[in-house]
Length: 242
Image 1 (tube, one colour):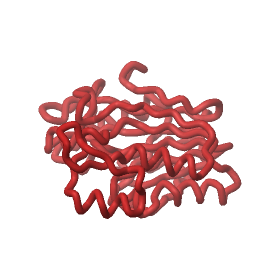
Image 2: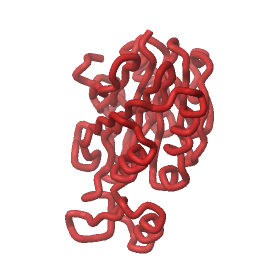
Image 3: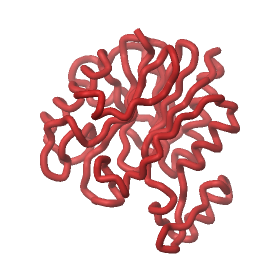
Image 4: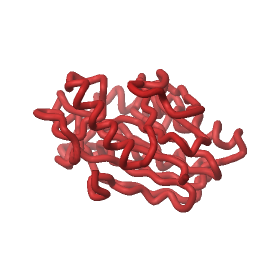
């Protein structure tokens, strides 16, 4: 993988990270080409090659999750054994190890990378996870470990102009997080999950936030479930500098 196939995140000194695109892999058809999702119907061998390429790009194995739209945070205490598809069933990872990278998979949800002093985290925030507190729980875990997040990178996700939802759902979510209420470009109810992420980071006092504000539905260089239905997954990946 060349650096042009990863959207580099500005995480300051001490951490490296970024967001993959569709380019640089071996998957074919609707999964072309750097599909990293093992939970779709892509060829497992192709996914394994793609994941190795991302691991090579970051110079260490990448730990991935089985993501279930929860508020669960899993601590990674070492590199996953070879061939491991998922290290846990959760929606956020954190580690103080330099020999492993953390990866979360998305195709419209929000990937978030967090860097503290000697501690990094990766968060998958969909509608349910964001409302249930997956990001706030991760930030609290970092603070409790004595390394609060000083920098955050928000990756591409579906934007408020495109994430159409029923009016009742918008009202339900907005009752808890008013900032996410949005309207599509065609005038129907919508949610802006990235706005909710930015608000939670601000409430937590994270001083530096970088947002790669590309919309997955609008950008053909990214996987989007809302646009394509059957599709692959790209990733947000972060690691401590070795």
